[in-house]
Length: 272
Image 1 (spheres, rainbow, N blue to C red):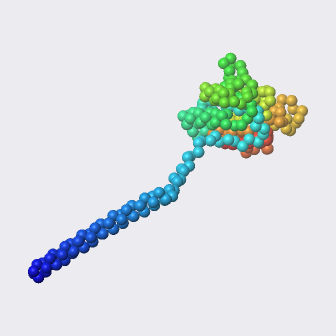
Image 2: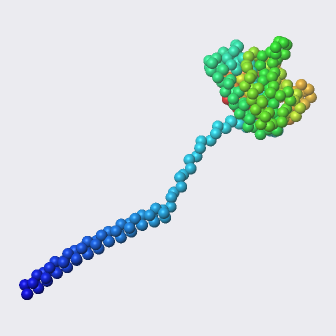
């Protein structure tokens, strides 16, 4: 009997040990599950509460803007005068003073037209037109003068685009009738500002001296009838190699023709 009781007691101790062992394993499992859940919950809360840094916007490169010249006079009624002479594309004896090849000069002429189109498209004028001058007309009697409009046209998207189409179609050739071009510009009713784009060598229907006398006459001698009206300003863009053209008179020494035109009219000079 005693032996049986000892066996039962021994068996109970083993069962109790096994029970304790099972309970320990269960507790460990519960703790692991609870800890895992806590970690996952903490990570989830962190992801939700974490402030996302907004992406830094990248600045787009600015669109190409036209290089606008510094206009010194009224910007309401403007006439652009573009040199279409042969020297602009490497034709004629005058081209010998340039260092560029004929192909380079032709490319330069296209670039000049593109830059003029940018100005026509963007300058804040009220009315405008563009005159192209170069060579002789088809009848061979008068200089060739072409215009985007026979009069000052109101600035609008349509008139600007139409002027650019005309400029695209113009070809260069022949001499340089600078004086007739300026006189045509002055004849337009309401003109206040002229922008002259030229390589600086009048060779047809007027010399450099004739042009300078015309643009400077009314500012020196008010009685000089054939002169540029004093209220009109001429800005000049010198194209390419602007060589110095000394005049017989001392005041013209070491000054280029294009710079002198701008100076006499109170305008601005820029070299392209």
